Image (tube, rainbow, N blue to C red; front, side):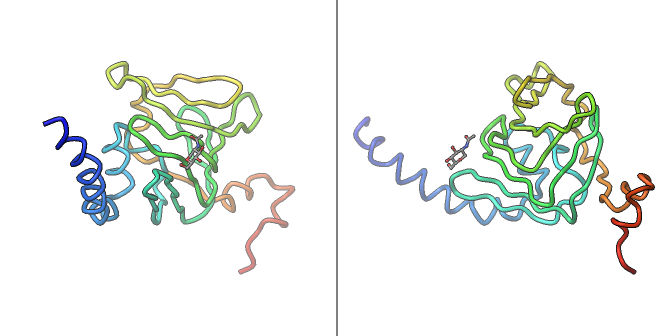
Length: 162
Ligand SMILES: *[C@@H]1O[C@H](CO)[C@@H](O)[C@H](O)[C@H]1NC(C)=O
């Protein structure tokens, strides 16, 4: 029995993965996150599409770079990528968080223990624990044109030609 398991397991895992692949692609990003034990609202409301490589590299495409709010302000690049595995996004690129007037890249988002109700943001210099309930729904994300208009001095430079 152990012999047949040794032979079958790699093959069946392999074929199961490729059978499931088309299904994974029809998932919304929210479904995908939840299937990996993560809250549905980690990515904002303007996600257009995402791509998941067989090695777990996730690339999320947004309508435009934008700012949203969880507990504090966060900034999403147009493309955000990370290694997705159960309970975590590591090697994150394209997400920054405002911390005491500094914008720090968020390097990972981890849920170690869903029953704790906590989610961990790895911002390099520190780990920050936040309530998972902040991430239940995708946040509204405002494109930068809207935000820079409020800055006044930079207004002209950033205004889109109409
Ligand atoms: C992400 O995945 C790639 C490819 O599997 C790997 O080379 C890289 O080290 C991973 N990064 C992290 C931070 O785990």
